[in-house]
Length: 113
Image (cartoon, rainbow, N blue to C red; front, side):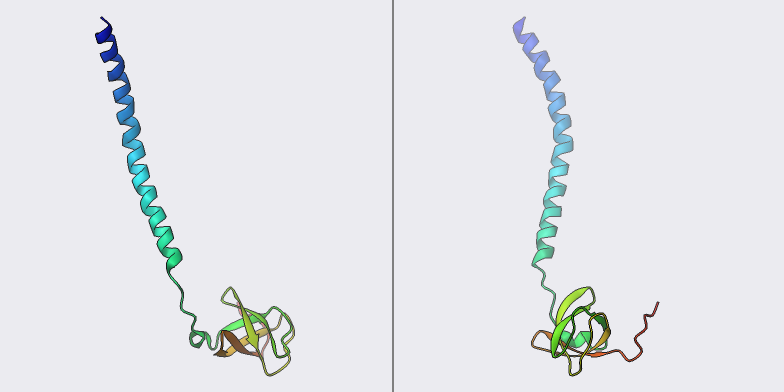
C-alpha cells in the first residue's frame, strides 16, 4: 500500500518538476545569451578618430584660454583654442591633436532647431 502511495506522490511532483523545467531552462538559456551579448558589447572599443569630428559643433563647458573642456556629440573632451572662448559658447571642431580637440568659436552663435 505504501509503494502505491509513494508512486502517486512521485507522479504529482514529476509533473510540477517538468513544468518548472519547461519554464526555467529556456529562461536560463535566454539569460545566458543576453549576458554574453552584453559582455561582448563592452569589449568593443570605439576608435578615437578626431578626423571624423572636424566640423562638428559643440559647446564650451569651461572657459578656454589655451585649453579647456568642450561637449561634443554628448562626450566631454579636452580642447585647445587660439582665442579666448567663454564657457557656454558654441564651438566648431577644426582639428584633433593628442586626444584633444582644436576648436574655434562659432561666428553665428545661434541654435539651429
